Length: 236
Image 1 (tube, rainbow, N blue to C red):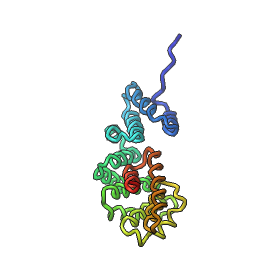
Image 2: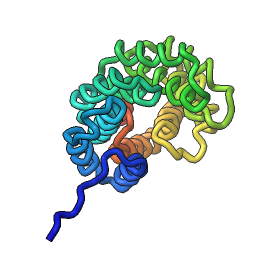
Image 3: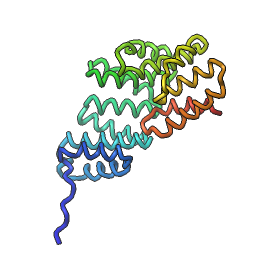
Image 4: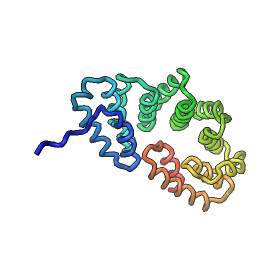
């Protein structure tokens, strides 16, 4: 019997295949696939494919919260093919690993280069989050203020603005923030709702929402660990 041919690691179908695997929660399989691909002849001879597989493996490792290993992969990937997406993933990995100066510098350089609207939305929110997590509250507020009026797709920026305002002056912003949190369909919305409930004196409700926020962040592989720590601190 002839051996079955191995995967075509340079196929145009690879990105769709890896995305599907990641969506299905098969993150370890994505890492294994990328590792095998990086040893294959067609990939070793192509900077583009090597950079691609390093970036996808780094992103998968970030989903598992293996941040140092993700950073190592993504730094090598960006050296080979410095795309906006791969560089933003690197910034995310820096931020989640607590390397805030590196993260903020990465996001600022990307924004200065004038990315497309979709990338600007994503990168500016990550920049503000890194600033907030590192204690640069004024910078974080200034970042979200620049983008909060750009339409519905910037809802998370507006929620982050309320989270910061409630952190600074809960009594002043509690009622408005409570209305803006809406149906609390994201981790950040839950954090805002919890802060607003606490500011209005409903500590039982606040604790219930903090617990719900903690569950949300535990189930979101790419969520920033800073927000989980915020929720956890208010439950204890």
